[in-house]
Amino acid sequence: MSETILILGASGQIGNELTQELRSIYGNSSVIASDIKEGNEEMMSSGPFEIIDATDKETILKMVKKYKVSQVYLLAAMLSATAEKFPQKAWDLNMSSLLGVLELAKDKHIKQVYWPSSIAVFGPTTPKENTPQKTIIEPSTVYGISKLSGEFWCNYYHEKYGVDVRSLRYPGVISWKVKPGGGTTDYAVDIYFKAVEEGNYECFVSKETRLPMMYMNDAVAATIQLMQAKPEDVKIRTSYNLAAMDFTPEEMAVEIRKHIPNFKVSYKPDSRQEIADSWPSSIDDSEARKDWNWQHKFNLTSMTSDILKNIQN
Ligand code: VAH
Image (cartoon, rainbow, N blue to C red; front, side, top):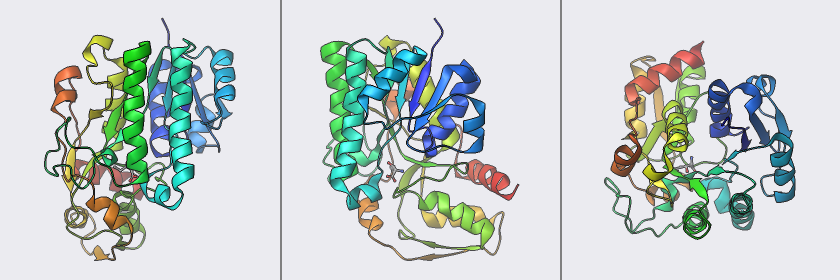
């Protein structure tokens, strides 16, 4: 049976690249992109686009019926740093959008749901090294609280109503096509652009801040691989730990200097340092590798050369 996919939040950092990859697999006309604002030229010109607010369940249902949608990818969310500035708005956007889509699946309007969680579910009491799938989860950020709640709503709708909802705890995701908005890990994107454009970067977290990170290519591949896995292989219905690498801004600078020798970094930690300090420094994703054969492809060296090559072109 052919799939028709609706992406909510398609203009965002991950939504944009998921849209392109899904269109290359399922066909441009089978992947409807949507957001509250239009996306980049590549996305807008390659297939159908609708203006949809992810919290507007009625409009989502109308579009599901209009396009006979079978799968919804819900990428719309307010990220960690912005969520600390607008807690109630973040909670409303992140939670009502998820509950609305889960209800559509429960009422059989759609067959499958993808919803991203994050390593932000973990808090300062979580073991920091090789954080296991099941461990202490006491988030200290609004974003982390919304992701923790969302994970257990997903599990509830799966257990109680048989909803086929699947989720990944993304690490910091690094890309060059569409910049992220309002994240704590955004420094790991900004640093590449500033290295090319200005030859120096003022980093808003300390040089020894170690965080789990992943290249966008791997994050998109993992997402689609999970959604295409056999239902019986998806054994975790809260959200899977997902990992590729972990590094500090200083290790990034050393890698960048292999391409831009005089690149300089200064450090001026701001309020995002406290958020970063509450998160793990590395993740154990052995369940994902065991249950549905997850395997990352990019490390800091190969990601850095790929990003700089694309930005400099
Ligand atoms: C953020 N990029 O910084 C997101 C992500 C693990 C971090 O959830 O908020």
